[in-house]
Length: 463
Ligand code: CMC
Image (cartoon, rainbow, N blue to C red; front, side):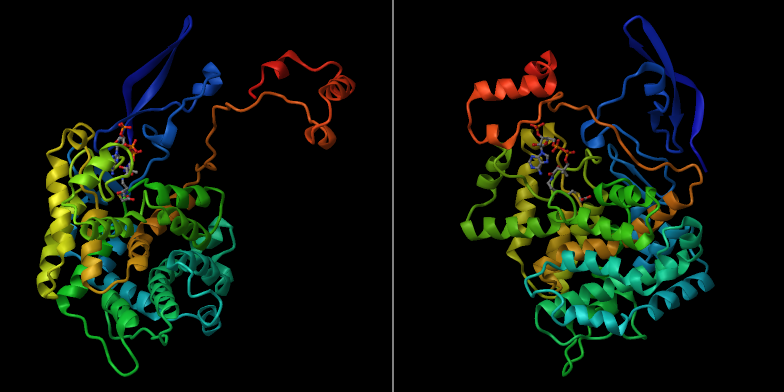
């Protein structure tokens, strides 16, 4: 599968000259002007703050139609995957490009299972290697990179060799990200470490490692396991988001898979990206505590004093299809665990208010995936600081697939954007004694000595 280039071209006029550039059309019909030769032909570069209009690559993994609220993994709509699939099957689809046969599925699941435990030497990290105050995202990022040290054959930073071990590395990371996450939680809470079990499925094993005690086996309700699995599935990939772009950027330098996904975790942590799920619940708790019905918070968001967390998206200009699925799932989970969470009512009220408010309507701000996921995570007993970790576990298949797409592209280039420099023009180096307040006439004299009178450019430089 690839894009097609048709006879359509785009013309750019600069002064007296007009230049023509090819237009690429993706398989879903989206068009892109190929400006690969722009600088060599015109001397200009393009400026696109935040890459809002820039396709950084061609990719076959995930498609989003932000205007229609469509999302598909390898061509299969997210609603169909949510209805029929599991996280592990979805991971296979995203990583390998097609749904697995029964045999492939069984081999893949076995491989993931076999890799669930950590090298015993890594356990020392959980025994005083981090302070109890460490955020689990910091632990996760460090340890994902560290895991690679135990498999030197997979982290050579030589593409052919790293690709040769790709299947093992992918299964290993999918499995160990879950174990590291659970261990980080237990270490932080002073709980004994619980090892994974061979007879449990992916999400059930995670819940077991999180919540089982030596004196009490934890058996989650099937609907709780399914809800967690659904959350992971819905987060599995989302094309060129901030963390995936980070993974691709790191991969583009030739760095191995472990280093690349570890960087992805760091990018995900921020509150404008994966960190938003934690902030949504904090926002809802704040509103609840203050007794506000949401009106004051929405007014503050409109005045730019805060943001309505879990709202808005760079690509979706309508309802995020993942949020729609999670809204329904949140109601179901709360009824299963028999919890009446006032935060769900507040979230629904906030959504109602925001969706009838011209500020949010004009800016196409709708609930995104983070708006309802936190309510489910909270209902199943997940602590707040683990919310973004859950996003990271879910996003792992996407990061892995994107790393592979970059690493296996023989024409791939290092990702290295340009910039429009707006800093000082050439300035003089002022010696410390002048910076420390000696007379300006001394400085003038010294400047003449060093630079033969200084330059007019320097005089015009920004102060
Ligand atoms: N609350 C209030 N105003 C908002 C919000 C919000 N959540 N999001 C955007 N706006 C306003 C923004 O102030 C701007 O207004 P104006 O045109 O008057 O300056 C306009 O809408 C466009 O916003 P932007 O920041 O230029 O949009 P962006 O595409 O750069 O940012 C976003 C996208 C997701 C970072 C942003 O909508 C946001 O901060 N949302 C809250 C955080 C959040 O929920 N993040 C999770 C994103 S989905 C999961 C993921 O993929 O990470």
